[in-house]
Image (cartoon, rainbow, N blue to C red):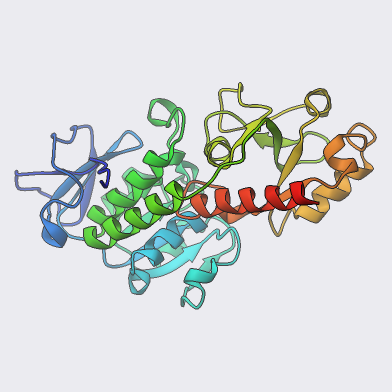
Length: 328
């Protein structure tokens, strides 16, 4: 039976703003995100401690980060995306061929965003919305532009602790309601749930380092974010699972002490898996690690490592790669 994720509050009162607004009024209790179909507007919802109201589905959307762009594409909303920015890598094969207008390789400035005449900005990180970036959320609201942050990236009291696949699937549901495509969201969640249920995690005690970036000081997956969630689904034991954070900086001496069975390498254009391997082999401290001596590496693309529709796929890939290592 399909699990539902209550996320959107449909308001009965008449909303004063035509597009969106932010304020302190909490959203009222509500039915599921798919209630009322695509015409279930107006809606009100709480997102990263910001209350947003919408009278209609956004039509001109700017996306920032791969996870937001890929979710909208998977929901069939590519034609509504007027500009994308800060993409973390190529689109997955299932979405290849999408016609995107990329306005910046990093967080775009507000001028570039406003030139697209958007009515909504969907960001992967809260930090995307700053005076130096696309603009603060309240300032965008004053311009009639709505905003939404991937809930997995919320900070403070709104930060998921820990992040789970329920949170990832809830964002899909919420996006379906926000953008007026609840049926597409239902189908996507069902597909993701089925894929997750079909995974066969590794058994036994396979310890792992999630190596995201860094040379002198590695930046690694910690205990409450997407790296931990993905490793749990794959059956790996994170050597830094006891760190109460999403990612964290550590000393190489901690890695050496843990001597992980495998090393998960995040492959990014600006910090490739190959460059990480070279660093591990060149570093006198890590060159003697069992995983380095025996080339026990697992590679995942950066765009699949932040909370989004590619996390289940990433867990499956890790399972397959580990099985291949064990078969050698």
